[in-house]
Image (cartoon, rainbow, N blue to C red; front, side):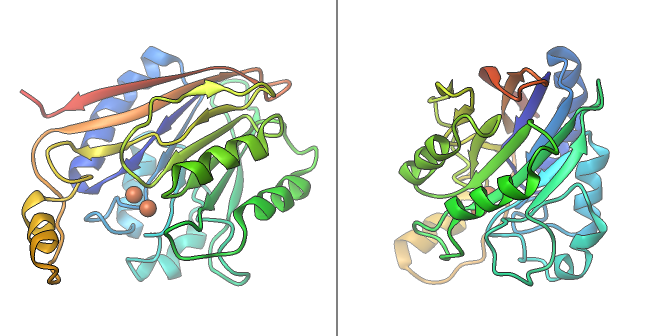
Amino acid sequence: MRILLVGDVVGRPGRRAVRALLPQVVAETGADLVVANGENAAGGFGLTRETTQELLDSGIDVITTGNHIWDRREMLACIDEFPQMVRPANYPPGTPGQGMTVVRSRKGGHPVAVINLMGRTFMTPLDCPFRTADRLLEELGEATRIVVVDFHAEATAEKVAMGWHLDGRVSVVFGTHTHVPTADERVLPGGTAYITDLGMAGPMDGIIGMAREPVLRHLLTALPHRFEVAAGPSRVDMALVELDPRTGRAHAIQRLHRYFGAD
Ligand SMILES: [Fe+2]
Ligand SMILES: [Fe+2]
């Protein structure tokens, strides 16, 4: 069984790139499930009902999110309309939405649990993501052995720690949030595929997807500036995980990327 993972989708350029490229990538890789982080899908900040639906219509089966989940206020009201969407599970009890969902793979109809967690280092300190992961796995019990974890975090060490914490207990731990792919993909000894950060699906000539000028002016002046999604060609960063659906153990993880709108 193969699961395709896509990094943070940034704004309209990211959505367009995913929509254009995903069918071909899925056909080429034989992916049975596509999981993408959508926290930046609407203008770079959060998601709307419409952008969420657009991502799902583009062939994404499960949308994970992160710290930008509530940037668009309408998401507070509509998140529960999307059973294929998760927000970090370690938000306080009572937060709208869900931190874990179980869906079926395209081929074979295998149940797959997708969990979203958020790091605490250099981010809003939520409940402990490590203990939250333990609790969710206990909750999941024998429902499925195929478990996909998006750890949305800033610090590489915190993400590496989560990989080891969950090794042998989940199929894959992938990092998101930095929008910069890391080259450390591997299968850990217990059979968990791991990568510190997938990267993003978004404009490659910006600063992690945002237009350069306002970001640079902000850095040079320390004054507030309105950030906007960059224009130009996009890069779509992904990883493909191969696993045994009976055991949930991963055999392989491979990074891949595609360009869209480039000359
Ligand atoms: Fe992001
Ligand atoms: Fe983020």
